[in-house]
Image (cartoon, rainbow, N blue to C red; front, side, top):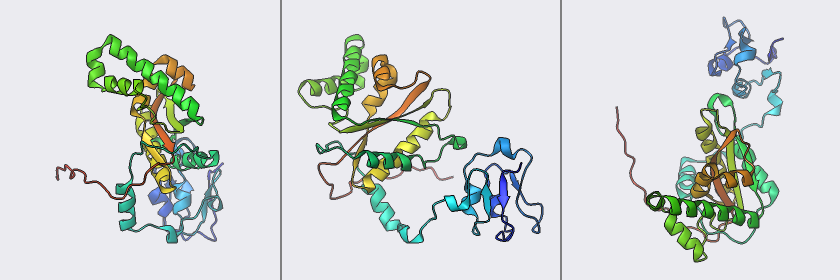
Length: 274
């Protein structure tokens, strides 16, 4: 059974769907033909939905995706280059949070947007762990400190190069630099055998980070936490990561306590033009 359905009354036979198919499994033998699948369509299709969403006439659908199921792009919501530049350059890593939790439906929206990220072969490999309770975030942060203390004890030179001695000293003085007092923590993990887990999860977390900023939340990548998850079995187990998975990133989320008023200067691009 064909996986492509074409409404011939709507189709203008422009061939855009075939041209945009990344797997090249839609063919049009002539301008008089309608789009049709190649013999290996079922096995090769990435399920990206590009063919459906690029069709200007809404004439093409797949067995699993109809044109009317796709949210239309509203041109009125398009941002200007100036708006995009300020938004992207003005984004900050937030490390001071209000003592206020984020509603679960807002956290769910963050994940929904994050799952729109590109991924290799459209595998969408990410799985999510959301630590909702601030007390649990604090408990897990303490486990990271335990991991750091072990490194300091066993390999002080490595601990010093990683900055762990200062982090533990701050903890002992009452200042938490692991999750920065954030009320929530989100961890992305995927099958450790998937070769693009790091790239795919990083892209998804980046969208989550940016969308959080757009709705008034603050986010910050949890580098110490992420490093500890895969290196410290007690934390890995406490977090509930499946044994055949690997954590590929962690991000703290909450309401920022302070607002930034300007964009700091960054280094100029280091480019070799060919």
